[in-house]
Image (cartoon, rainbow, N blue to C red; front, side):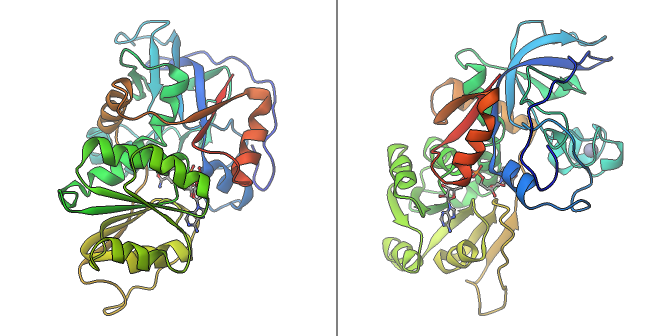
Length: 342
Ligand code: NAD
Ligand code: ZN
């Protein structure tokens, strides 16, 4: 890919693994809305890395080749790739949260990974620069189905887990944006908490999807959405709002729909802003962003996937058709997650 242009399909050499590295034969690479932000919006200099590189930061497949010293994996074994590649030695990386690596200059790419500055998984093979990022798939998970779990699953999982103390029986969580991440977020809330789930989207089909996965109430995004959420919560508001869009309008909706003593968690990177002032937001509403998740959390998400408790709805596309997957996402005709199968 390049900035401000459509990605192109090109021939690249098959990678060979160096010491401690792994080459994964890709079984599926999810197409994330973040890729659209990359190709549509970012300018050179916004991020600490630049194209060209192969897209695809949501990957699973089979071990293809092992570098010297990698002993915990076997060729042919089904695996998922943890996508945020940090330095490996800082306080964050040591506990598996490479997404928040504090030593980015020592990472394979600063604050990125495969498909984010380095070559990713929309290709037959992906070179993973450190074997610790290659996680064995549990029994019962096909790589093409597992791929979305590494981002569309892991990112909402992390955002939900950090607020789990709020998600007691009687609580309410609001999911704004029931796309790739949001429809998995609904499933994770239902599978791991007793909270009531309210899903919000601009598309009726997305709300139907949320309902299919157990949302207790669905609300069309718009001027009356906050009022409907307050009404449905006895006037109190939601204990957790997960904003998988992150635009001005959805942040405003989130703040209007939130309860006192709550979390408003911004996951979507639409770039909106929220004015925060003493009387402008509910008392003790915390506003936070989250970025991706940790390696231990990925293992937990894969377990949910293998046990059928969380199953992303996927549409598969051949590598040659990857552009049409992005086009459908841009035109909002895609439901769930697109997975590119090379
Ligand atoms: P997607 O395109 O699959 O889904 C977005 C959904 O939001 C769609 O269903 C769309 O109809 C809905 N939507 C759009 N505007 C809305 C509005 N005003 N109100 C309610 N719903 C609205 O996107 P995705 O791949 O799920 O990604 C969602 C966002 O999360 C993107 O901004 C992406 O870049 C970001 N993201 C963040 C992280 C992170 O770590 N923070 C990780 C992955 C993706
Ligand atoms: Zn680090």
